Image 1 (cartoon, one colour):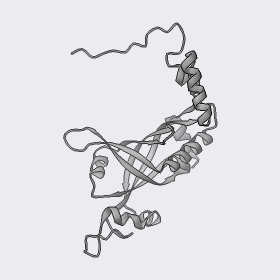
Image 2 (cartoon, helix red, strand yellow):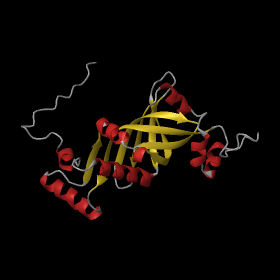
Image 3 (cartoon, helix red, strand yellow):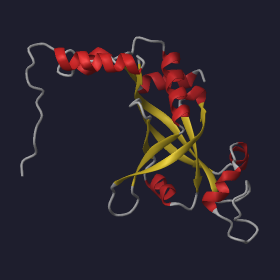
Image 4 (cartoon, helix red, strand yellow):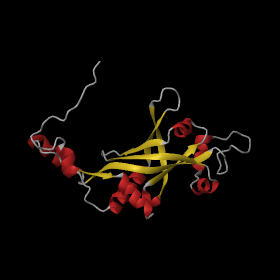
Length: 209
């Protein structure tokens, strides 16, 4: 079966994706882009981490993860993990990950990065929460008890490579009005701030943080 091709049909010189053109908002300082992304991810708290299955299937697998903290001025993400879980096998096989965040109003963020599993006890203790006991359980051997010294507790550190995100530029009333106008006129609704943080941006930011 022949693979379907998409050729970006001739649009007479007009932008083929007018919504993106109308909402792209990259003409802001890098510091603001990163600050807004970090605030959004922290407010969402939960994100989906996509890894490649380390087993023979090689399928992409997503899991819900709770953001613990950020590093490097907001670009790197930390998550708790049980080092004996399947996701650590996935990351050992292929460290490339994507973290996606979404809220109830449709704002979203996508972070592509490389992950490492950190077992440094000082870092684990710094971000330890007693709630982890509910996820790891107490095995009753005096060691694997879900406490801060439980050797199963580690940190997944995701170092950002690139990011794309969309946050609202209007309140709910303004968004509804924009969509209604777009439906009637065919004019793309200007409701979001679509931003991109490039690999070059990340390298520049990392050099000073």
